[in-house]
Image (cartoon, rainbow, N blue to C red; front, side, top):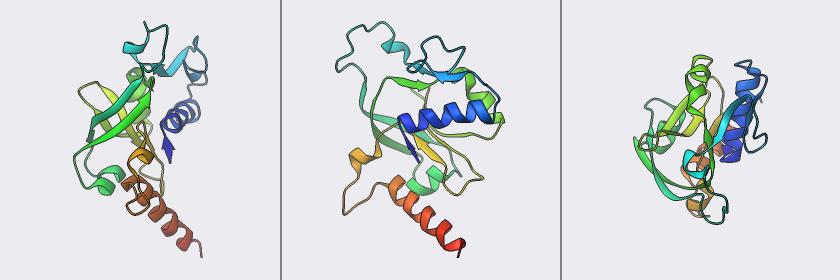
Length: 159
């Protein structure tokens, strides 16, 4: 399970090792990356003094039907809280989709990726937002609940 930077690192790894984009990187790590699969948001590029200027707050996410994320949430539209400046570079989405990475949640208003997953994996889910901001001891966030449930199922299948 990858949260925010975890999703971004998963995308970089997938691009490098599955899509054969050997120089895939984030412009946060390498501003001169030849294959920036993760790039600073367009609205952030001109900001010199960062402070509290990142993408903050609750944003809409449209969920792709028949995905792990749709089964977890049991909804087509969710709202989740964000805190970041870098996003998946849409120039690489089709190439990664063609190799098996599912972009299961999108903010269609902004045209940005919200969730990713691999359908052929027990639990390979990443989200750009921060589910921990909405999780409580007595009511786990759906993604944490789904992660624990998938972990238990996988563990029991190995016995």
